[in-house]
Image (tube, rainbow, N blue to C red; front, side, top):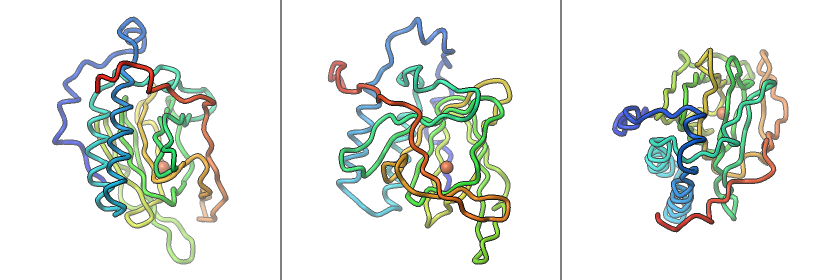
Length: 222
Ligand code: FE
């Protein structure tokens, strides 16, 4: 499943802050992330049906990535050697985790799966997602053309709707950042990358950061 965020395209009309401008502006508006975390927890209190989680969760994520004024710079920092995966929040029962992914120019993931449901919302820049299908004999084939996800777009993955893909930065000259939500503490989930023959290799991603943003200390305005 993949749903572009056409109904909330107002995000594209908002000013796009560069890193320097952001540093001079107000502090990151972490209340947005706090509100998202609360709303997502309430959603999972309300339903365990994946179709409902993905549909309603996509709307919550669209609201979060509609504004680019809340992610602290340290969780949007690319690294020269590979893409980065920063944990922003993990539910106390590990029902979901929120992660920022940062791709520098030319960076891409291996072919990989997730084993749990996941939602991707592009916050900054643009990404390409190439889906794969895996035949019973293990061979991988591309499932259609790569999908280009611009800022504000939402996509979903899961074992039931398509779980294997490669994601790359669609920009040649700058980083791209997306916010992902998964139905587990994804950095600790045992999953797989796949080589060219479709042979799986065990993979536990971990996270690049040691500390998560403090979303609880700002004024409880929302
Ligand atoms: Fe992925």
